[in-house]
Image (cartoon, rainbow, N blue to C red; front, side, top):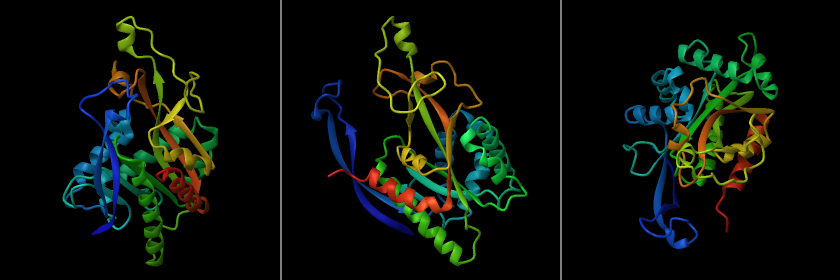
Length: 292
């Protein structure tokens, strides 16, 4: 069943024009219909698995992705996919939440929890996770997993979070186990690194001013998901971490798009108390709404 339909203008680079990007003539505007659906067990398995692999990046091989997708699809009335060619097409984006306590006995979830605890151990602001995820704790932590194609407009995100809030409310009314005390968003950030291609060509890389925040090497931290910057302001803790698996040489250059610096991704965790989730989603919607 389609949840909601919206029309968003999506920018795509024209096939010709000034490569510097200084002219508006470099872009064509395309009208694309985005449709929101419940996760569909019959058609979404491979699309969701691909998006999870993208979300977990270099460490995706550490997780049982098929089992995690099966878990997401086992709760089809919770969470959303975004498609552009009807319900039978592959998702271009998704959002779901997993009750880490309810599914603590699932081997795939156990692996994910242990991974999260290991990464959070190096982040003082995430120290609460150790007690929250302890088997003796009464806390109910909802793990939010969401990912999308890199060229998807950000305006598709707030409706997914808004619908998730509604679905959780309905699930609680039906006495389903979604009365969360906390939400943990698993996401990703990146830093810019010197391009190996520039070094090989003996060309000096241009310096670029980064955003607020810094990594261990002093560079700016960027968000793949701009909504994370808003969620982080409402969080009780957040932090980025290096992946366990090292990228192959040259991977940073392979991930750069229309920029001169290489891109080095890292994981990112955001922990929110349940009563802060609604105002965080509202602020996110205001931040990502199209500017007049």
